[in-house]
Length: 75
Image 1 (cartoon, rainbow, N blue to C red):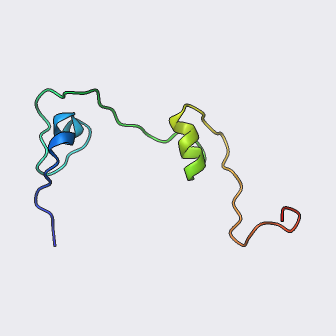
Image 2 (image 1 turned 30 degrees about the vertical axis):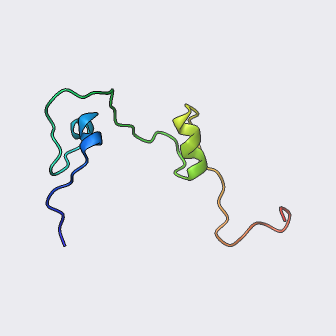
Image 3 (image 1 turned 60 degrees about the vertical axis):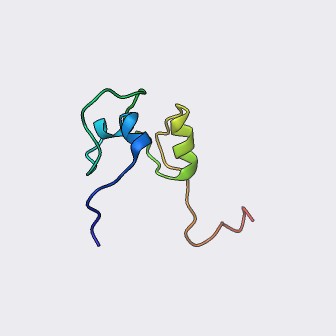
């Protein structure tokens, strides 16, 4: 089932239509708030680094991951 139109009155009034094209949301008119679009700049893409990035901390390398579990020395 395809969505033909989205009704998000509050987000529309604060300018979400100026950030991205959304069917049913106006790209025109004066926004009642400041708006912007962020892009990732850190090397890692996990939740922890994402929160750091929001606060202005940029990482140059990803944190280690353990797909097969933690190493024995760590446990």
